[in-house]
Length: 455
Image (cartoon, rainbow, N blue to C red; front, side, top):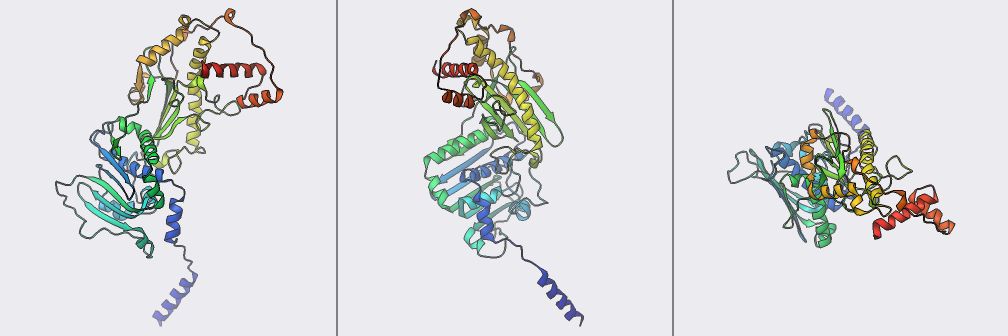
């Protein structure tokens, strides 16, 4: 009687249950929908760099470590000689879809949400082989995606006879992935040299700081070059520097001048040494124009400007970036406060560039352009890498330092008045585009544009 009552109660409870288990194929399709193939590969490189930095005794010397990526028309592979993934982590958390509550991230990692590796696998192809070696464990996992999708279970399985706890000396720690039966997107892209070249350039930029610390990243046999990002620093010229450090998050900002370059100028924003915004010249940083809360729109006068922001957090969920690590979270209160500081620091450096421009105007003799002469010499002789400057930040201050006393603007005796008439409709279009208020401002801006770009 008791057993029958129990079964009846269980049947009644079953009737109340609503199945909310996601369909695998739908889940996988949606998982990869909003990520590009380029970003999927970037996620796997990020994971490799995390593992390397976790195993490096000296976080500022990564010269013993390497990430190797190969893209072929029928195969993708990536391997690193970092700490590897333990069987416990693989069994309990790493292959979960989303970060499990029990999953402890690597300190100061780039990974955050627990979906990057699996999402990348499914984006690239359908037959995946994983091999991992740590100092005290080793395993292989093979995933055939169509076969896995055809069953109800969500688990993966270690390959039989690959689990080991006594590691042969010939085995070095590291993690490798090989993917065959590529997606149509991967087949086409991996055969396209433009895609390969773009991937090499972008991964090189994203990990410029880690490459600067000695890390080797190879893509299709090409060792990514060390990108030099530097600011002028000497006794007369010092970048402006600001920092705020707390237990959860530290922010360090520096801004100054470097080589005059339209392409390289702008703001660079890093999260845990991973570049998120590169050479930014938009309102995402400070360049809003007169209708915004920032500074004037980017133009030739500011080509010497460089700004660098370094966010660092032990727990990467505290970082104010978006989920694909392609930009900042513009709604983040943390980023809003930092951006306000970036605007103030940009204005300090702009004051120098305004003087450099004014000193060159109005036919001022070259030998009278004393501030320009001093800046040109410093740019040639006194550029220091941002890594080195970050290490000596105690020598910097919030005030941007430059030899203002050398400034020698041209006298009015060398000036000439220019007047001309233009159609009103075209004038209004130009004034609106320049975001200025008067005909005098339009004339000044268009003349400056011609001088900057044609002379």
